[in-house]
Length: 492
Ligand code: F6P
Image (tube, rainbow, N blue to C red; front, top):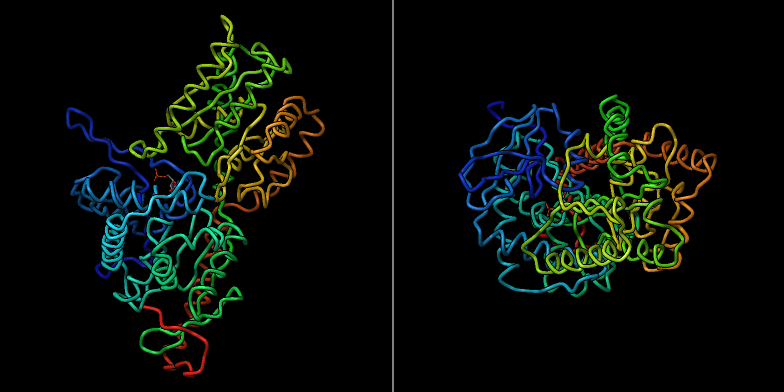
């Protein structure tokens, strides 16, 4: 670390690694779950950056440390804060609200108070690590107040915010008692990035309807507390993966060998279908399993020729909606396996674990059909990983229209996950796809995924931050203020 701090500081709820303390007090670090780390890890690796985030365990005071070229600065959360800020406001209020209220959001004032307090702690931690004029990149819905809080502490910084999940239509966002405070928090950033154009449009419409700011275009002007003008950009930057690295991983002899072993362990069926998700109600896991069960019932497939592997990695296990989902999924899997399984042929291989990347690459290679059936999903990087792994142009991707990935991956078989009959036909189409069609589709998919990789995403975002940051520095240096009649409102 330099004496004056870092030129790039990433701030996210979790650090890229999770602390696990077992019963005997033994400490280990594992890769954090989810798409955010998948995307950001290659961006910050060896970039001499600092990463501010929570260790994933409550009540742990951990000194900052270096990990593979990144300086990790842990933010401490008490058990009560984990319950109210992380499990409560982030994952039982914002998460369901931002995902089409698939589960009902809970609104509790005590959770909101804790969310504010924890966001302020993250803002202070980021301010501490940032060099003069540094770029601070804040991530995701858990930290929406950080941009404005950080700007108050450090007006010299260039602040970007990226929302990894959908931003809801105004008619849903309107439900949130603290909707105005959330907008003010986000508007502290110079650039606010979203996965899809619809997300950015939803955000700008909320700004338009709840403030006096004219946010009709992607770049608009606001007036700061001290009367200065500031430009804000709010637009889509679809996130991706380190496609080349994933492609390379899938080509290694070890991964190819492991893929063969997996098929053998599954009994060498004609068709292997695969689902890979965090065990989350937004992912449409129940819908997918229902479809597979009905296909068995209709005898359009049999367990001997078509098996389903469902990786459901543990997630947010203290939140009731997630506990309910786990129970529902496991009952459904048990019922289908009991009804249709045979000695030597399991219908659904249900794996409630997380796996390292090389095992994931082998699973993707072993699967003829990848099933992504989310009911709402910011992007879905699993779909992109599957495509990056299929270097021999085989395999078929079934993709929900309700994912951000659907905007780009037009070579997939698109499904509406609520249309069970439509999904049944799509699964069958994918399972029996002629090799020539599969090659044609996969070539198209790979063109997109290999070209639009995570480094392109990061550069697009950070380049925009330079443009807007320069513009705002120029405003500041010229001491430009807006005329009192301008149609803007003060932002804290
Ligand atoms: O993008 C959604 C997100 O919350 C990310 O921040 C994270 O990568 C992933 O889901 C996993 O969630 P959690 O940190 O709650 O386990």
